[in-house]
Image (cartoon, rainbow, N blue to C red; front, side):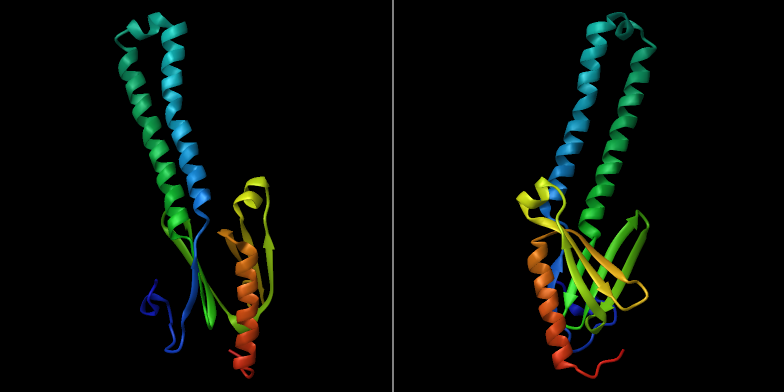
Length: 182
């Protein structure tokens, strides 16, 4: 589990309730997609060798094809790496005092949003698509009274259970700390 010493502005009595990432099936889908994309050059080679046999015998074409192939695989790896980082570094942490939304928005931009539990007004879930319903993952929308009015947990497992737990946690917090204003 994650230690509170790594959380920004952690309090002494703060406990991590749960840590969420996107569902693993989302990552596996992207891996399968990149595997299929990686196989495309073999199909292109078969197509060229079948229909344009003379093209492969030209000595100037082979270095160009090799360079194109290397460039193609560099881009495939770059996009795969970006997708993996987006999966791995997007984290949602729910503690007994607040919710932290840590998102990677580019290779060199990370946004951390904090919503205190007493500011939460509404929690909504959304599961879109057959795969999301079958594998039970979806989005959890948290409406707050702060300047950033909506926090989204994207493609998390068991979204209805997560929403129920957050609603229960908010109710507990408001009962335990009735005079909290900031």
